Length: 155
Image (tube, rainbow, N blue to C red; front, side):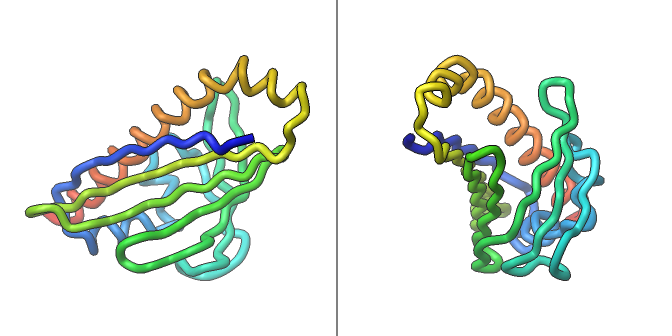
């Protein structure tokens, strides 16, 4: 099944280094991201390829925990975070680029379902739109939260 993708951009009134520092501060993620209730580091120190953590968010009125890991880093301009759950591979890419007196922060999220069974196709057709809308809203909130923290650090 082809991956589904969402891409959002947010201008941040802070330097790229300030945005990168917030984006890669896993230990403060639960305080920065209003949609995240807790983060538990599983492996790795700081923010490096291979660092793993469990992130708990409230979605559709229930808490859900996913294990995530840093798959790529091209500091301070790009990082890729991955997760795998229930037969689906998730990829989130953040890019940080100077834009005028601030930074353009872009977040791209994709989900690729490994199974192409009829049941999976029907479930994606029925629930895919709802899930994509909820994911888009959560991503926009994350970008706003990252921007607010980076802008506060720049004051």
